[in-house]
Length: 172
Image (tube, rainbow, N blue to C red; front, side, top):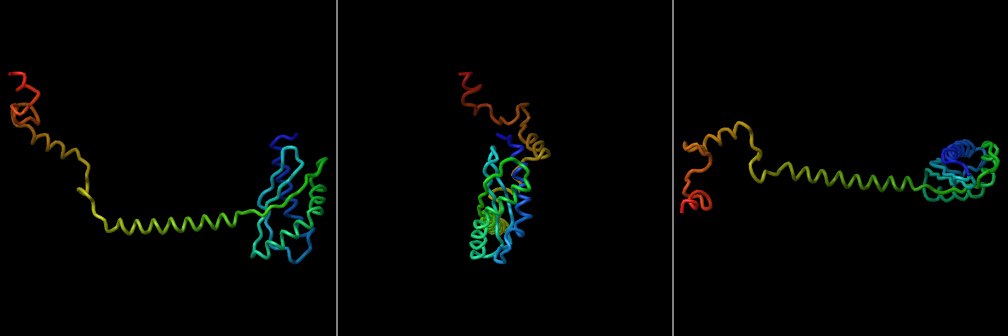
């Protein structure tokens, strides 16, 4: 059993060999513009999954998938010759869903931009619920403290008789 680092190196080598030799092995003009996006190899180096995308319409994708399936043995021979390991892995081709996922993400991003623009439009005409600046500033705090002092040396307490639980209740 090979270590994961070696499996990654073999997968990278399979990717480059397959991408370079695709046009040489499959000489059919119906082969679309194929991009090998990823290759995954099992840790025992026995199976390789090759992911690809095809530029074109659905008919082009189907024709390319059929050609890849038809020439899978020739591509495996090419990989075996260029890989230089004892056993050549079996090859399977899978159409990669990257373009569809990317289109879906682009749609979601467009919707988010539209919502952001709508919220920004609503916010531009909005007014504050309270004051424009609800925070206290240090210079205002000093003015308020001076106003609260009624001359008896106790801040904030204008009438000691109003104290329900304090000094008035203790004197009774």
